[in-house]
Image (cartoon, rainbow, N blue to C red; front, side, top):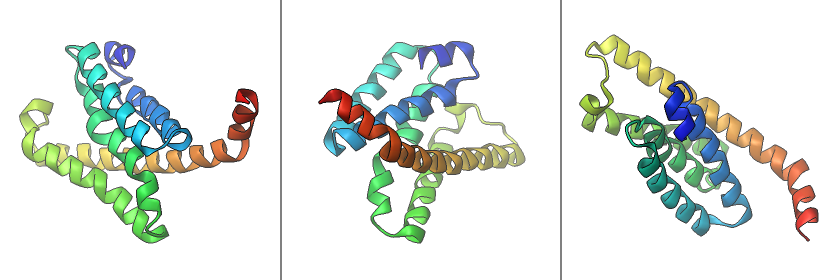
Length: 151
């Protein structure tokens, strides 16, 4: 995430990649260790990144909760899980907009703010699809190879 912050264009990508690590920890080790890893990674990300706080904020407030609630929401059924999965980032984006408009330096015009939040919602939707596909690929073809190697 430090390199993503240095380059300036890889902020969201680096936060998403770190969330993949949390997803694998959740699958292999369990929910408790995934939450602990999320807390440690979030704190370290804020400490290491220094001036650029966008990538750690994306991980802490956006991608991290999406990973930690993914399997919880999937127990509710297919339609209801998608409603919950998409309402969580929407609620987080609304709270960020409500309390941190000045901190994020959002544009003053409402049209640009709507464009920002629509693109963030699209990123959340595509990330959820990516989590589903990545979990399916991992469970079907990669996991048994890793478990065979570790035995």
